[in-house]
Length: 150
Image (cartoon, rainbow, N blue to C red; front, top):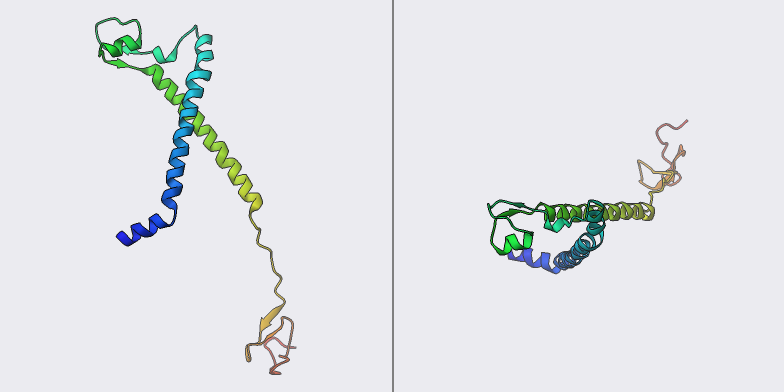
C-alpha cells in the first residue's frame, strides 16, 4: 500500500491536483467579488435599492435594523440574501466551467488525428507466409496454387 502511495505521489497527480485547488480557490474569490461588488449592486438598485447581503429573517422576538446588528447580538437568523449571492456565484462558476469544457472539447476534436483507411493490397501466403498480392493465384515464392485460383 505504501508503495502504491509513493508511486501515486511521484507521478505528478498530486501536484496537478494541488495546482488545480489553488487556482480554483483564487478563481472563486474573483467570482465572489464579481457577484458581490459588480453584479448584485445594480440588481439591488433595480429592485428598489435592496442590498442582498442584508436580507434575512430574524428568528428572535427582538427587532434589529440590520443583519450585522442581529449577528452581533447573537440572534438566530436565516440569511437568505447571502444564500442568493452564493447561488449566483455557483451559477457563474458553472457557466464558466461549462464554456471552458465546450471550448476544450472543440479544440481537441480539431487536433485529433483521424484514422486513415488503408486499402489492403496484400495478403500472406498460407503455405510460406510470404507477402503476396491480394489478387495473386499462385505464390511467386513457393509456387503454391492459392485457394480461389482460377
